[in-house]
Length: 271
Ligand SMILES: NC(=O)c1ccc[n+]([C@@H]2O[C@H](COP(=O)([O-])OP(=O)(O)OC[C@H]3O[C@@H](n4cnc5c(N)ncnc54)[C@H](OP(=O)(O)O)[C@@H]3O)[C@@H](O)[C@H]2O)c1
Image (cartoon, rainbow, N blue to C red; front, side, top):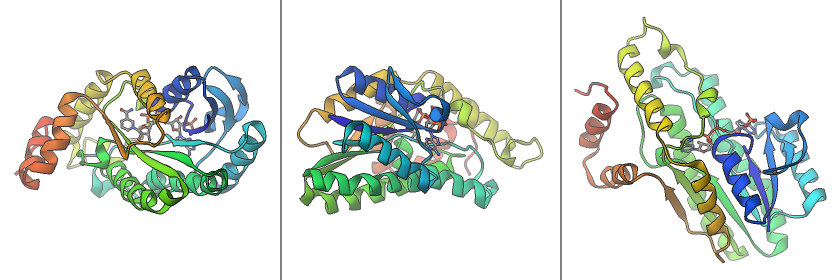
């Protein structure tokens, strides 16, 4: 089974590519950090890939094709997280998040689909998040991008099913992936900012939850197991019991009550 993984240099993408390779799959791993590290490694064959650059995605596709042939699976893990108040995101910050988290997945899928159709089938995994289902304060841009992924995947699933292509949205809860290195705090991070107090408490809770989050290798193994099935499930919520409960409550409770509970959980105020 030939698998392309984007965003494979760290965090969940790295652990997913590692587990897929351990499961005996032929993995082509892409990330910007691989610019000077292309070649065979423990998590597959590494290639430079920037999902914000059309030329880079084209090159990745051509190189991956000549190395291994058309992909049976595309796994889109590349993502960024910028914390900040909705009011404070600049247009550029919003664009950055949407470009990587949503457009990047859509454009990788666009490149893989003709190859999968020609091959008579395939599997596509989009990386959403629990935030693709419910919002967390100060993750407005990220939440918007993951909701976009969810909607896109739902339409895609119906369109590509006749070609034998199945689409799965992976919704991870907090995982110990060390992604804090990619967080870029916006102007909310200044003590003069009106959101500062609630923001600091929320960020501390987010950090705590992630440091105590689930094992990223477990997530990689769950994905590997599911890839061995004939068809992918529509959705894989890979989260702790309390995060699964939050998803359920979000569906059942009145929106304002849920917002109050979640805001208080993160140490913020809700009036
Ligand atoms: N960790 C969690 O708890 C969690 C929870 C829910 C969802 N997720 C999702 O899981 C995925 C991985 O997240 P993570 O927390 O593990 O993050 P991470 O450790 O920060 O890894 C992000 C990965 O994306 C890559 N990336 C970022 N921008 C890119 C670009 N323009 N082109 C190509 N690759 C790019 C990074 O590689 P380079 O910088 O080398 O390009 C890196 O490999 C994301 O989609 C995230 O939204 C994570």
